[in-house]
Image (cartoon, rainbow, N blue to C red; front, side):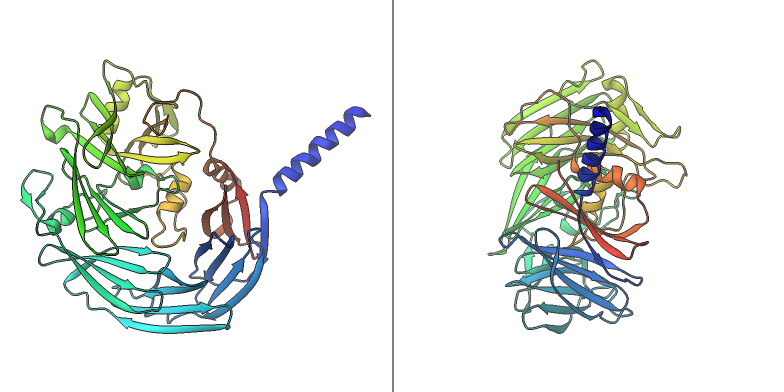
Length: 478
């Protein structure tokens, strides 16, 4: 009898534990062409969730339990003209959505005022014939569109403030020296235009959100940018000898350059590879040859904080995971047995490094990733793969367009845990919230319109259940 009671208790506890993952569910019938993202009010612990389809835009204000406390809907802007939801900014507690045409020359905004029950719209026309759009950034008060001028040596910011006022700022780079990957003199436009296909397109710049794990597919890009409300930091790693860092002050619109040297490796530069990741005002750099691996932590003044190395003769002693290979021609996942294999393989791929906070420590992923392949049978990958892609694919909001940036790619990686002084911490790694989310989606894939954000110590995953016609939130913790 006691055994039956104990088993029943364990069963009920299991159900309760599982059910606690579901925070809330809201019935909503969505049509096709959906976009989803949210804005957070950390002070009030509120979320405003925007769900649009081909007909309507629904604004749902949620409390910290993800319960709907207010809502407002509006007609979606003309789909033939305004094809993309590109970002937002905030006006007090209200959110202004930004829509654009494919060429970004036509901008349409909707300000959702939940107090007055009004949706205020406005249209803008941008002249971009001599510019190429690089990236978009959504801030607390301002929304930015960053472009590079095709003539001259400048970037331009198209700025929309919280009142909806539009201004432009041109940022001059004429005083800075540029070298391309072949060490030939160039300019800003030339460095950004350099063709790194098939992995990285000309005139592209990967936006990184360090609050979430970043996939190696994103961190392996050579031209990256990092945004906060005070500055935009751009890192360029097209030259294997150094990382060129530019910091754009969003109050003065002045730009500061920092040159952070990579570890010197002798030999033909054609067989060398390097990259970096900007995190907590430090630059985490990696550089490889066919048989050498260097990992350095530096400040932006080029001061070395910590450095680790490995080679075909010296094993990698700063890792906390196995050296894994996934997506090879043989399919499946396998473990590499020595550092020589690992170094050789990542040097032949697109080299990347990414950082993520776990408490007071930093989890770092090192590795290489191939360009997307067309072969069938490629498998998915955990950790910085599925949800790293989920988050990093957001442009100016966490709209989820893909579940796995490692799909149809070859990926080689390891992970290591380090303290805030760069010292390696030994021990086993515990599963992250992102691993748990991946496990959930392995078994539940009839969903769409996903969004992911962190509030407090929990990650909230929202998705539309195509069967039940509900928008559901589940809560996960690291």
